[in-house]
Length: 354
Image (cartoon, rainbow, N blue to C red; front, side, top):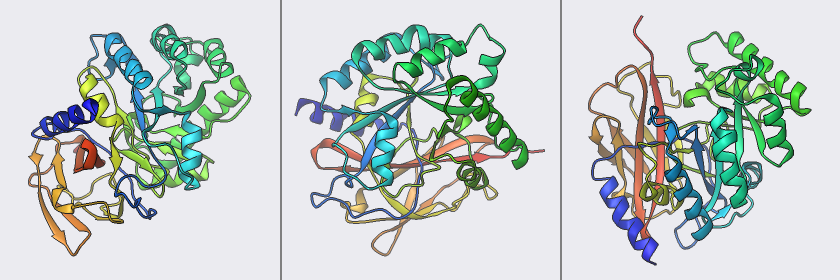
């Protein structure tokens, strides 16, 4: 109960003026009778680097990471392997309330030296998304293939980030396809099995890339927009809460770990690579999830947005100013009983001007 009250206070403070992120769409099952989570939902965390203080936007401090592990061990959470969660999500099977998965993007040396030993000691499963080129050229900043094999043999799920960590957006589709195929071939050659999970490099994707991921045999692809994975969400654009030094406080971690989905359908625009800026953002909330008058949306760099309700379930977000070139995010949240928050967000990419 103390944690729940703390989460309520933290959330109110955060959403008074702090912007974070997420994404997803499709048709979802009805909410539970108590108005809380759908039968299958889970929070997925994303980490990148560890203990590299000069990179606060991509690295988490080790003391922060240790506090996250301690919270997962001591709190009312069930930490599961990501494939187990996604299998339940895709089959609409029930998951425990506060189900959590841990993911890491990029197989740097610090993952092997710092993150994995701590996770292994705590008995927490993890998924590692790897970029294969740094491993192939034996980059001193990255793990070796032997170290990746050791982690895989110890039960770590290995997914694919790509050949590099560079965004696939803006490249010809055949070039993106060739890179993903080449990287997947390398993982299969080194580990004996082909990856079925993909993390979008830098969290950037388009509808064409989503279609490509399905064509290439990936069962799911994950972004870097904040939000909760739920049954019916777009399985080629699943959200994750990114943890770094700047946004890795234990308060934010608890807020995210206790989040519930705000299930939506009919998302517009459905293309995250913007051609109209600011975008005409709108979505339909699915199911009886509570008082939609309590939904608030925040745009990166612009704060709280004006909302317009259309009918009982449609929400249109009136974004005041164009977004600058590059990645940008909009987050929508709604408080629910027990001090928790429903969360939906999107990440857009504004093309650089020629």
